[in-house]
Amino acid sequence: MASKKWVEVSDSDCATACEAVSSESSYDGNKVSVDKFAKLLCSEQLGPDLGRVGFKFIRDMMVGIDRAQSVNLTDITKALCEGIRPHATHKRLSRNLCNPELSESLSDRLLKLGAAQVKKDTRLIVHMYELNKKYARKVEYLPTSEHDESAGFKVCGVIANDLGLRRYFPLVASVWSEDVPGYVSDITEIKKVLHRVAEATGNRGMFYFDDKSMDDDLLLPILEERSLNIVMFQRSGASVRYRQKICSLKEVAEGVETAYGKMMFKLVPKGASGMSNLTDIDLFVHAGVTAIKSKEAGRNLRLIALKSKNRLMGEISVPMITTAEGLRSRKALMGLVESFLTIQDTLTAHHALIKRFHPASFRVLTYSRLQFLMTLLQAVMYHQVSVAGKVVIDGHYMSSNPHDGDLDRTYYLPEDKSAS
Image (cartoon, rainbow, N blue to C red; front, side):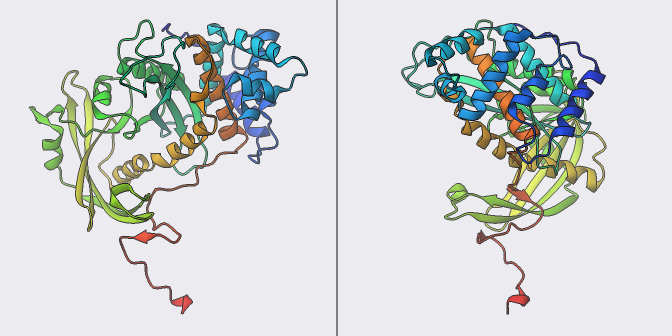
């Protein structure tokens, strides 16, 4: 896959574009239409002139995807209602999707717009999902296997969110498969995404990795990337340098004093962890930190020994690895722990939004068209979340306070004397 060249746009131009979005956004879903956002996104404030054809195509696709709540070209064609034969509209959209340069320009503009709003402590949440086409046979570079019905394209996305805020910014999403020319490994593709975001943000923010969609072995090589600011769970049996020795992460974690702690409450869905109903679990979370170095590159890191205790589940210990510094105080250490444990609130909202558009329902046959289609979907989701305010983070699955509602609980609530 060709490497991307960053669009040279001045910070003042990007700031002007961001101010234009902020000043016109009322977050009531009415003031800034997707059509108006498309015009801003294609303006010369964020990159070189795209031409009338390029702008019209991007605007039509964004409007169509938004109206149809789908990435299927047939659905988009119907939603546009152009007053001509649907076949002609469908053919035009499909033809214009085969434009890698326009696709790359749009992706750069979206990333530039979102990156301008990333601050030092912004969470850059990295997650993955798949586009499975069980019955497809003719899609270019789609892996096929008689024994693997879930074979499909992989997507790595990064969304930005500041702790405590109810909105976030989709920054980028990259799609690939093992059959794409030049493919080396999944971790190579993930690293491309991370370095692209780091360059766009000027290395502001910190990458938080979703352990539910990315396993430890996949993330382990990222510990050697010296330029990236990271925080991740790492449950693997990997070894690191600790006090002039080579030790396993588990050995290091067991020797760390967990001096700071706090009570937290985790909302567990029905069926998970053997729960028969939606259950609020009380967890005493305690943590300590020590300095380590990565085994290969000798990179300076911090290991957070994170332990949680519950009377039903016992004590669970999970090492966290981070590049964050200044974690000696309770506020700094437990603040980072809480920030990491609550990324699922943002991811739950984002994955619900992704599902709304049924991305696996795409009906394009070439890889370049699929890439462009996913970028256009990113643009529509950016509008819905960050501009129109149609999606907010309102679920708190890990909280410092008991969850409200009629729930099963592993603890007793204080008696409500006012009810008597």
